[in-house]
Length: 264
Image (cartoon, rainbow, N blue to C red; front, side, top):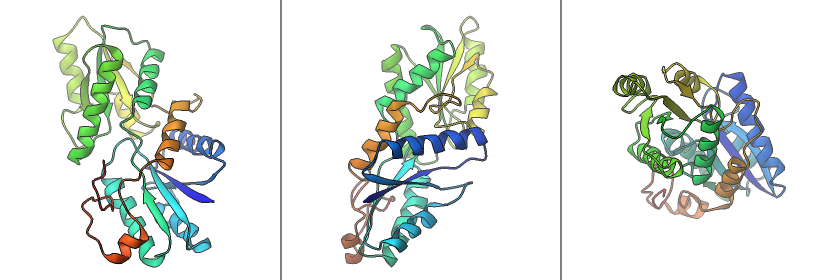
């Protein structure tokens, strides 16, 4: 049986941790052909190297897909997860380890975003700000801009983009600016976040008139779209060719996520 390691960021927010665990469980229930395991790149344990090492100790020839439960391909994918896979291959050259793309961008995630906006009372004509966690990786920022375009298409009007860290403009600066420039309009934040946690708290303190819940909203069922996206990532193309043969041959990798071809 092949193994899928679903690696999320990790959080000390109890509600957020429960939501992520429910997503992992839902994917496992929908994937009888897979052994589905949970791992984290920060804050929580077990981390990716520990979970991956446990799989390979039981079966050194295992076929493992590491699926980032992250909305963009940033540092944690290109560094933390890639390092874990590379180090594991150094000890288990007969294993087949792949890193699949992050969850976003994906139209199905935007469908959930629109649903969350409707739940908090969004109306056509509101000023919508897409709030993303942010990354210093320019490629991850471009992925966020693609989500912005997809959301504009879904809503039928322009959408502002703001970051919660690492990039500009910051949500905390953009919201008061928009309220000053458009005093007769409501400013509504679409929280492009996977689950409750620190960044979700920041969106709620932004001063916006309305703020949507994350994609995995507390006390809501796991959206079918999210389960489908994770399953498609695990079953679909990887971020490159992180195979034992390439690793053993010492082939150069052009992608920081441990691939011998571009990530996307």
